[in-house]
Structure formats: structure tokens, C-alpha cells
Length: 562
Image 1 (cartoon, rainbow, N blue to C red):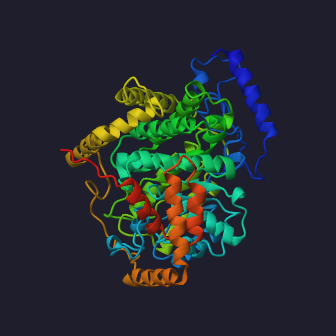
Image 2: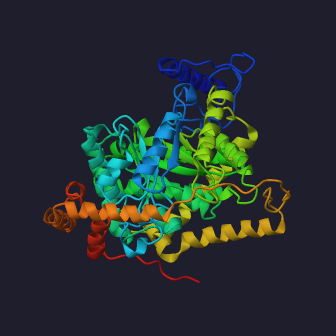
Image 3: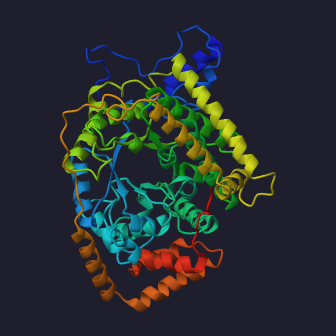
């Protein structure tokens, strides 16, 4: 790019920066030195390829979505939490919000993630252990008791039964007196990554995509600020994928959901802003920064050039980040505070929109109040003390970071091409990327490549080529065992008791009629969300709704592979 074009871009950025709202804050170094809001090539100097780097708030958004960077608003501190019953988790949420958290993120227990009630035989011993138990809208009311759902953004990490859980959230908001159309938050709903990595599905892909399409339509029409899909790379990376695989598989899944929306006749400029992303931030500092920058650039280009998005918001890749759970070690667990801080800083320098920092004891158990507070304070130290919020994309133009960004982008594009090849030449009922994803799931293509990457990394660890402090090097320690959070069996006993009382007190005839009506709507082309909401309002449980759909659609079993 020649000097005149660079100067014109800087002038466009300056005009947008001047017009944007900035926080009332001190944007100087610790020593009081003023710093510019963004840095670029010296005036009058050409920079080949600068159009791929650009300016913050301008296509291709390599350097961020907003001209102000974090000077306009900082990232949202969104700590992932959930354990025991709804009352216990409600107390943790109030602690997080009271300590400065900016949003909530709900972790559900395994029965809830699998669409099972707490009294289901398959739930035995699992209730409340890896997240909060939610059986009905009544639990959702307790979960957010005293928390204004119209005033706080809420993320829910659940995919298989995401749609009925979302309906329970909407009903809880209604019962608070909130206007559902004003709600803001994110539902994960990403079923592709379940087949690829996490394995928490209910049905075959087709019924899941039916529900997701209905949800996209409903939110675009009724709840425009709410994001019904958070396309998740986090679980793909935790399963053993490389940074480039995480990026490529996740964005390919995102393209698949774009194709789903288009196949429903939705306007990409209307529904695409409702797609958000969820990435892992691992411990290789610069690789992670490059990954996030490449993600924005790829998404913007594909949405514009392949899928026809014309609005800025439809081309924006907005993402939440969680520090890498798989990087935490049971050996010398206090070292995890350092790992988490480094990973969080990489996410911030990569321009994350919201962030969860893992607690030091999460490799052993759910976080204690103390370790949860340390994780929260880690973000606040970065935000308040380090100066990283003063300059947009401060590593932009670094030879190393730009080369890594380009390299990861190139690898991702090669993977996209292979996925599309898996789908064949068509015709494609939804779209070519979706066909490739479904074929890749069916053939074990994704799981095979992830397994190979995980194997290569494990070999490097065992040979000592890759090192983890406290695990295969620097293993001596004077540290003592941690006190960890333990979930009492009484949680399950009490949850089952309360569930039985609720079932006894409701109108069973109304429940059965509403669930039957929901299934009947599912046999038509009508949107299922209103009928599902009616079932939830009648106090149908999550298990009852999901069991009715299992009876109608069957269940999915992954083919055995060797």
C-alpha cells in the first residue's frame, strides 16, 4: 500500500475515532507519558500489504472492530460459574457482580447438558457436580433471583438442549417483568462442535439444525440484541486441536450457520450480527494473538465476498475468550495463576470482546470462592494496572505477529478448501460448507485430525521437547495440597425433592397438552419456539421436553471407529 493510501486510511480512522465515545480515563503510561490511541507506519512511508493490517474499526478488522479499541469500552469480564443448585449458584453470581464482573456465564451440570432431569436414572451421582442443575423455568427463576435480566448480559454454555433451556430463560425474564425483546446475551447452541469435539448431543444433526434455524428466525424477529449462536472453538482446542485447526474448524462451523440462515430465507445483514464466537486462549502467547487477529480478518472477508454481507456489523467477528483449561496442571496448581494471566493477556492483545479467566484449582474441582476471586482479580489487574487498554492492537505491525497472523490464515484457508471438498460438488440442501461439515462428522474426519494433533503434542511432552513446569521439568515443590470445593450428595437429594414437589403442584393435563402441541408443530414447517415457550410456561421440565423430541426424532450414536 502506498503512502497516500495509508494516509487516507489514517484520516478515516481519525474521523471515526473523534466521533466515537471514549471512556473518561487516564490514557498515559505509569510514568505519565501520553500514548496515542493507535500506531501505524510513519507518515509518508509506504508499507506493502498494509491493506491486510489496516486501521481499527475498518475492514478487514484485523486490528479490531472499533476505532477506539478499549478506550471506548473495555472487554466484558464474564466469569463462567455454576455448581450445586440454583440457589447456591445465584449466590456466586451475586458475588461476581458485586466484585466487578460485567456479565454472567452459566455452567450447567451434566444431566442438564444432556437434556435429563435430576430425577432421571442417568443423572444419578451427577447432579450439580460440573455446573448448576436446571430442571424447569422455576429453577431458572431461582438462578437469577435478585438479578435484573433486562440489565445484565447473560451467556449460557449449552448446545444439545440449548433451545428449551433458552425458553426457560425467557420465561424467567417474563416472570421478573422484563420485556423479552430487550434481553441481551448469548446462547451457545453450537451443535457442530459437539459432533466434532465435546460429544454432548441429543439427536442426529438434521433435527438439531431445524431447532437452531427456528431459534435464529425467532431471535432475529423478536429479540434483536440477543445472540442465539456462539460458535465454539474452545472445546475443539481443548480436545487437542492446533491453533490453526481450532480457528479453521470454528469458522467453518460459523459459515455453516450462515448457510443455514440463508437457506431459511433470512437476510444475512440481519441475522449475521447475532452470531458470536468462543475461543480458547492457550499458553503460546504470540500464536494466540495472531489467531484472534486472523479470525477477524477471515470472517470479514468471507461474509462480504462469499455470503454477500454489506453491513459492518454483519462482517464483524465478535468473540468471547476463555483461558485454556487444558493448560492447567494438578501438579503445583498455584502456577496456574501465572498461566491464566499470560493467556488472558494474549486474549486482550488479540482484541477479545469478553473474557473468562480460569481459577487455579479448576483442574481438581470447581473453584472455591477464593480461587474464583483470584481469577476475577487477574482480569482487573490487566484492565486497571497494565496500560493494555490504552492503545488499540499495540502489536500491529510487528514483523513476528504479522507473519504469524498470515501463516495461521493461510493454514485455515487450506482447511476450508478441504472441508468444502468433503461435501462434493452438490447440490447442497443448506450449503457447500455445511455439506462438508456433515460429511466430515460422518466420516470421523475432524475427530481423526484432532486426535493426530493431540498425539503429536503428547509425544513431544513425553520426549521433553515441549515443557510444562511442575510436570516434566522443575518438579520439586514445597507447596501443600489445596482445599477444594466439594459438592455434597445432599444437593442431589434436595434437587430431586424439590422437583417432585413442583411436578405434584402443577397441572399435568396442561403440561401434557403443551408438550404434545410442541411435537405436532415440529411435524410442520412452523417455528417451534412459541410452542416450546408454552410448554415451559406450563412447567414442563427439560427432560420431558427433550424426551418427547427424542421419541419423535430418535437419538444420535457416534459410529465406532478404529
